[in-house]
Image 1 (cartoon, rainbow, N blue to C red):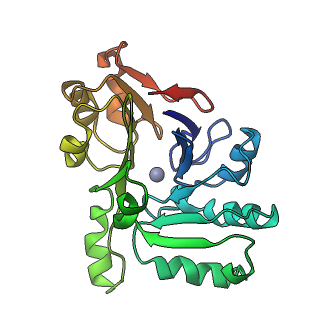
Image 2: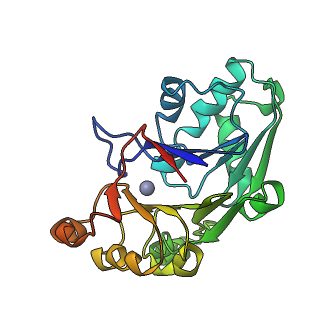
Length: 245
Ligand SMILES: [Zn+2]
């Protein structure tokens, strides 16, 4: 299995970093986890053909994870893709369909079949991919209640299981504690170092993980304790590098 981090930046756009997106290839299957703005350009630069992707997973609806989805779909149909595409969404899939309609993007006109599904269904279609709920969006509880909004605060980490070990893409987290069991013993984790407190990142060394790749920027508290990161275990994500599991 291999992973290419197309975007390792935080939610704050920067000149030298792209927004969240990770490409994973495993046994003839290619999937994309998150579609930060610019991910399609990144795919084209990486020489990914419009036919190659089998599925797209959106871990949550923050713009730095979903904003590139619409141009990705536009690329695929303008390029004449014919293979069906599975799109797994974190919650309320009909909302994304509504946005597509707002953008005059009608799936009936696509050159390929777009199958939209909920994240919970992922492992039914891809038996090597598992999703786990995270605590990333729980901080919105009050505002959602106060305004009686439909938001379900769903956010996911993804596990990709391979013949030589497993890879987890944590996506954004409040804490790493919320996925502690999910990540135990995996070969590699690509983990959000921008939101969780330093202690939450430092304690990952007790989870029997071979390689810990820090992405999505770096929190203030981790920046201050960077020297405590074991150099043999932790590294900062590099875009375009092919990570092999
Ligand atoms: Zn984010």
